[in-house]
Length: 625
Image (cartoon, rainbow, N blue to C red; front, side):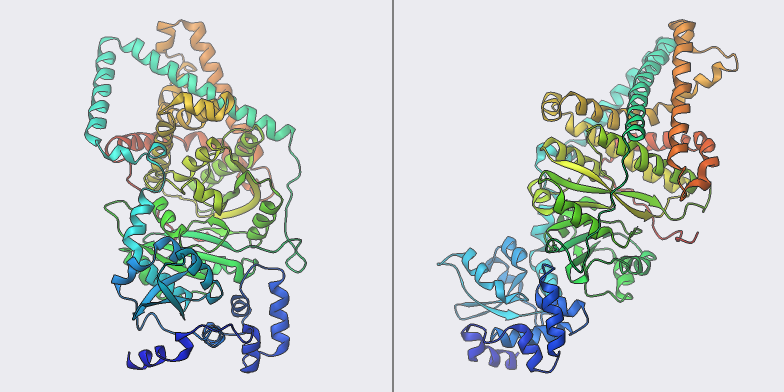
C-alpha cells in the first residue's frame, strides 16, 4: 500500500492533463504493435462501435494488460489492481449505483477531499463528472481492468441491485403480490374443490357434462387458432430472408450486443457451451456474453473455475435475496451490467447458428422503431435419443415452424420462448425487464410488449437445444410452463377491460386461447379422450344429458381436431432436416398424456408454491446422441 500511496502523490494523479498522444500511437511507440496493426484496428473501428483497445485485444494484437498500461500513461492516471487492493465497502455511498453501472466505474479510495474512481474508459470520465454536477464530489480517475470493476460493483452494490431485480416490474404488472397472503389462495382452492366434489356426488352426469362442455369450448378455441395459423402459413408463405451483414463492408456501424446466459447447478454444460459460442462469427470485440449464476451455486462456480473463458465472456454472480431464485431475477440483475445496445438471451444448452448475431443486428437496423423483440426458431440436436426426444422435436417443429409463424402473420400476441430472444435495450429497460416472480417470464414479457404497443418479429435463425427426453424431468419442465401460463393469464386478466382496450378484440381472444385454453386442454385432456370410447359402443355422459346427436357432433369435431394436429405436424417435419420423424408423428397421441400429469402438478404448485422454479437439468445428452 505504501508504494501505491506514493504513486498517488505524484502529479500523474493529482492533475489530469489532456492526453498527448492517442492510444494507438502509445502502443506503436512502445513497440507493442507496429503501424500496420494500428491501421488494421483503425479500419475495423470505422465499421464497428467499439473502443480501439477492445478491438486490438479481440484481434489478438495486444494483451489487455498492455491496453490498461497504455491508458494509464495516456491519461496520466494510476494503474491499480482491484483484486489486490479492493475498495472499502463504506465508499458505496459516495457514488450512485446507477451511475457506476452506466459508466462502468467504482469508487476506489479517498485521498483528502478527492475520490479516486476506478475506470477502464477514462475517455468518458468527464461525462461522469457532468452527471454529478458542479457541486458534486471531486473525482480523479485511476485505471483498472473492466472485469475487476464489475466484480467490485457487485460486491459494493449487490444487495441493493438484487432487491431491485426482484421488484423491477411494477406491482400492477407482476404476480409478486401473491406472496402477501398465500393462505387465502389455498382456502379458495379448497373451497372450489369441495364444491366440485359435492356437485359430482349430487349430480354426477351433469357435473361431467359441464366439464366436458368447457373442455370442448377450449378445444374449439385451440383448433380454430391452429387452423387459422396453419392456413395463414401455408397460403401466404414467403421465402425466408436470411439477412446477413457483410462484416467487411457493412452499411452501418455494427453495435455491441450483450447476451445473457443464465446458469444454475451446471456441472457438465460449461465446456460445451463455450465451444458452441466460440463458433459465432460476429466480431468478438462487439460481443458481450454474460454467464449469470446464483451466488450460492458452488457447482457452476467450480465448473467455470476449471474452464478457460475467452475475453468476451464474463461471469456475474447474483446475490441471494430472500428465498427467490428464478431465471428472470437473475436476468434483471445481470441486465444492469450489460454493455450492449441489443440484449439477447440464450439457455445453457443452446447451440445458436454461427451468424445469428449478424442477422439480429441487420434486422434491427432495417426494422421500424416499434419492433422491440426478435424471436429466433428453436430446435433440438438430440432428436434420435429416444421416443420422447423424437416426439418433443415434432412438437417443437409444429409450434416454431408452423403455428407460431402463422400466429405472427395473423397479428396476434406472440408468447416468447425462453431463449434466442433479442431486445432493443432501451425498450426492455422502459418495460422494466422481466417479472422476477413469474416462472414463464418470457411469455409474460411478450404480452407486456404487445400491451405497450411494441411488436415482436420472428427471425429465421435457429438455435439448437437439448430435448428433455426422460419422462419425469419432461413432466417437471412442462408443469413449470403450464403453471406459468396460468399465472400469466391471471396477472393480465386482473382487469379484462384494460387488457381488451390495450390489445383489441382479436388479440384479446388470442391471449385467452394461447394461455387459458392451452392450460385447459392439457388439464381436461382425459375428458376429451373419453370420446374414443364411443367408437367401441360404450355410452357417454353427454348422450345421456344432451342427447346422442350433440354427443356425436362433439366426438366428430374432436376427431377432426386430432387429424388436424397430425396434419400440421406432418407438414412441419416434412423438410429435409426432420423428414426422418414423419412416421413418428402418428405416435404423438400417446406422448401428450404426460402433459395432463404436468398440468395437475402445475395446478398444485399454482396454489401452494407459484414461484417455485422446477429446474431442467442440462448436459444429459449431447448433440451426437
